[in-house]
Image (cartoon, rainbow, N blue to C red; front, side, top):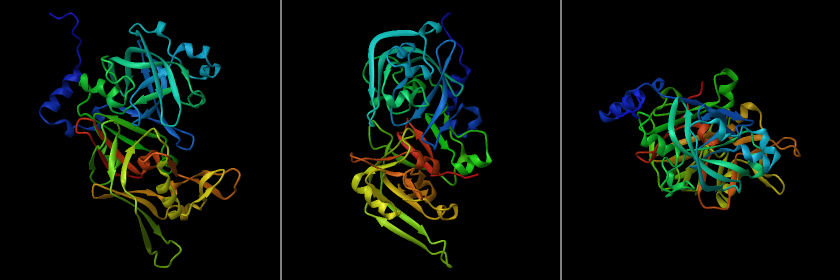
Length: 383
């Protein structure tokens, strides 16, 4: 008899469903839903996650654009007093912690960073438990993280993007942990982010990640699956981009479209707020939607009344299907120094890859399939 054997009914149920190809027939209610909370003007979305035994709780940015899981350590306050504003992990309070001597460091594309050491412990989220999950204990954080509402990052990118890729340590990333332990019925997670219209009439949550299934009540029609084109990122091919104008002040409500000479590849990133484009593309799109470049504020456009904001869209054709972002979602918060003007949701990057952040995902339900290496997209249902 194996005295170390642990019963895991959920694991064996999931394994059986996958064995006979029945996992897609299961109700989403059979799986863990991870509610997420919006920060300010939908800057980011965080979920409450537990680490350790008993679990210590943290607000973590649910990020498909990175792969590392990390939280602040109890020692981080020694390096910057601002860290005291965050939940901090105390290893002495966890009976299952394995502290490693290996150093850990991550630097993100926006220049923010965190560093410290590695540890292994129990991870709990969405009613799912991974018993041996590798994560970073951050002793030092850049100012952006210290001033942030979230405590750390819950990376949902591919293992090849992890800072510890190839280290030989078990369960390097959350996705690897889910797959290795067969904790979910299907190797997918669905992402739905609520918009302001939904939140005006509902108080349940600001969005949710569903691990192991999808919620068909959250989108319209069928999902279009796009193959991932990069070994590190949730990146897909974009065939074309166009701007759709509805002339609501026109008696015939005539629709006008403008095809832009833009195509390439885009990363679908829940950890990015805006729509990010190489400089020439951002310039072309912003001009097409009526934005102008301000030397101090960047791309801005006139704030419009609610009726006009609902007219028109920025459209993306991928895999033969067109997905839209409403014009009202391209208009962000007001520019303090310029009354009547708002920031554009279309911004720039010095790189050559487009990034479709939460502005895109609020308009389109996304399913991340990490076995078939594809992303399913469908227009989000508005309630």
